[in-house]
Length: 350
Image 1 (cartoon, rainbow, N blue to C red):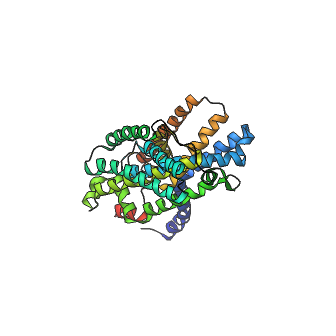
Image 2: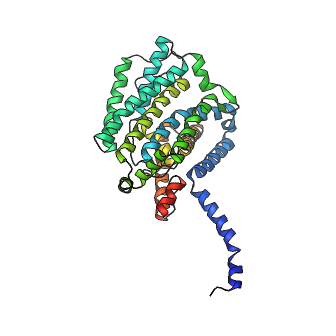
């Protein structure tokens, strides 16, 4: 029997428990943890090199992270469905080359260039979508093959030439700032992140991606078209990678046959660090942006610390391993970082 005294003594503990749960939830959100890590890295680097906190360097960091953010955002859609895309860098590079030549030779303006970049990415993403969603090849095999094909097409399309004449009306978007430390190109990227977040969190399609990534067999039995969802994620990844190619042109003012060849693993690393699990079903759009900024901040800090360029990929690898270990330990403790929208969690709990 529960006495009045027992009820009175137990009641005060409930607000404390709720507060503890809120703190626990905050600590499990990868975006918050990575943002805190960014603050720590920036503070330490500024203490050693005061110029690190200058508005010009902060603007450089944000602008430099935009291209990877597009690739990581597309990679997140694929990884949430328990897939992977090793060709995002090649899609970005080929898009940059095709769009760049149209700008350089035909005087194409910004909005048509953005549209063309999206179309190029869509066509190339369709190749991955067919191989994975229709032919049903393992994603790592399919995209490894398209990586080679698309990388070869970069050399074919350039034919020994390169894009090096982009008008200042475009390149200024990568260097101009709206506020100290806030480049214009970052503000142009945020709408894509917001739309992606809304799609993932508040649409049936977004919930289907989480369901497929969490348990494809259960999703199939629930009436979700698993292959259709996978097909769509690769299309979205292709479009976002193509837009990343346009962002690359704006930021760097050029492109060549080797553009994007080293960015495939960097994009995957940014997505993982931002909280998207390799095992699917966990992550989000904002994490891709935060992970990209964190990688750029870390690499810039390593440059300020005079760490040799050959060691910087090793540093990125260590960060990825730490993120994967963190995810694994969180799942073993039963505290998966985030399983998608609330509706899906409620259905799974019922």
